Length: 152
Image 1 (cartoon, rainbow, N blue to C red):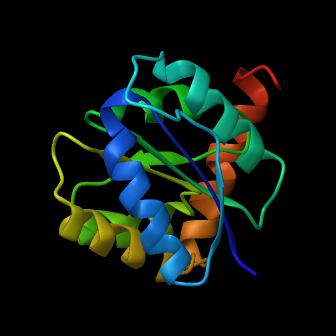
Image 2: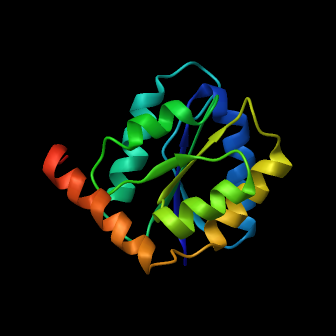
Image 3: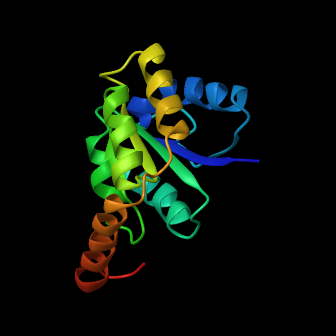
């Protein structure tokens, strides 16, 4: 079964609940790393949990949801082997997977409605990494990461 790890802060809590149901309907196993209520939490705590889980498995992909998708992407990208990107449309989601082998999708609950968010998630999950010239570039990202980032 395909596995997705997911997390949100309080701003993304409601959208996360809807995305979890959508993912289960597509046949995914979903691991929810929080938050578990609309009570305020600090997004770095949740983003770190999701990013650490994704970083240790090439097969696992993650989704993070906050107000804009930007804050969680910043945190997640501090973790080795993570390429997180905020997406607000299907084209960006497609490109993030095909060109950048993005393994964490971040969504902005204050920007996206559920229909568009579902379309973005579906497109992102269905798009394979293109390899070829893109692989050379992703390998350069990995090289930069190894040279300049501390491992977790």
